[in-house]
Image 1 (spheres, rainbow, N blue to C red):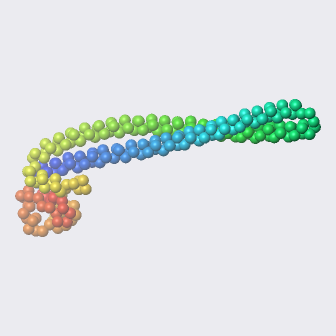
Image 2: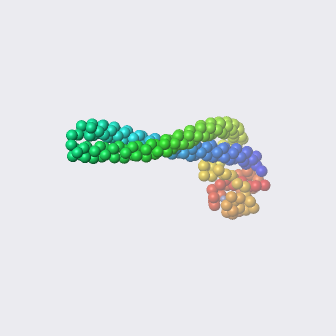
Length: 234
Ligand SMILES: [Zn+2]
């Protein structure tokens, strides 16, 4: 193999490794996004649970207020009953007292129901709060681990870029420019050997004339089929 081609292949080896590391680096962020979304969902659940408790507590205050009014009413009705002077007044006062007591009973039953619901709702808040804390802890750990991974990969990348630049010095400038132009994020692997008479990447046959020009000279040709850079294998 011509030394120019060998030098270019060494550069390509580094470039492929660099690409692999860049892909790993790019794959780190989506992992963080997933857990951040999970955290947002857990925070929203906790928020809803707290709002439900607030709403139930408002209802509780409102019913307690009503209960107080009914009790005052009951006292007044009781006082009226104590002060009656006729059987007719007694019947009316008793009916009013019964009515007040009935409303007190209803309000108390309502308060019991609210109190049961509040117990459940407060448990839900505690559970949601724990779930959120777990996710926050996991997120923190994941972030630390991702930061460590990123630092490792970035250090490897810096090393590889240095190595690549050192190797690139041995490649003739024009060949390197050609190679860099063909390489892109879509095409990681830019240099292929001829396999027989064809491109090793896409099997397109290279015309005889161009093949013979390559033989032994170290010249490279661009494949008409797929656009990669071809070199004579042997
Ligand atoms: Zn090809």
